[in-house]
Image (cartoon, rainbow, N blue to C red):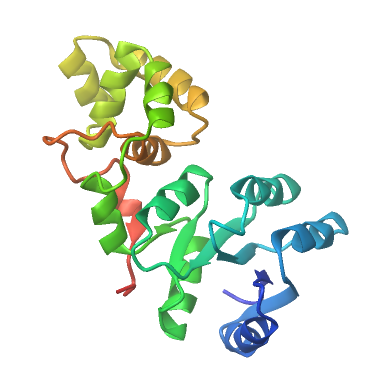
Length: 233
């Protein structure tokens, strides 16, 4: 890996300036920095094309739809958020629903930050294992809005989501539901379109965040091996 272009977004100029030498020493090129996502969108609109956007995440300040607009500007970009809330499993779920590639805590060491960014470039999803465990255990309460979202799914779609949560491949889901694997694929494609997710893992996390996980849910998320924890504490 050499000279990976990166854009840093953080409200603190001191923090942004402190990150620059660290990233440069690790073979990143800091194309630019911005104090907000809106300011960064202006830079992206002017032709800036980073491979990674590293953004400070505060749910009260950052509109997740704005992160979606970042990806609209640069579809190939990797979105990495730095969060301050050590136990904010709700923010973790929201970020992954929004298609974020990594959710890192600001308490991590510089070495772990660099390692995490390299994993993201390899196509991995990175998050703190402890927060993921809370998410899988159903630590995110099911809201009335979440219930309404689930009510919009068919019984078959709910069954397939539960299969995803159990870590089952399409073949096993098809066997359990007594349908063909091709039928599972058709339902899954329509389901992911309906809940605005791009892959099985995002769909499983959506289901967890919307209260679908039951007491018998296996802890092995589909694609769980894609999620790496270098040493996120």
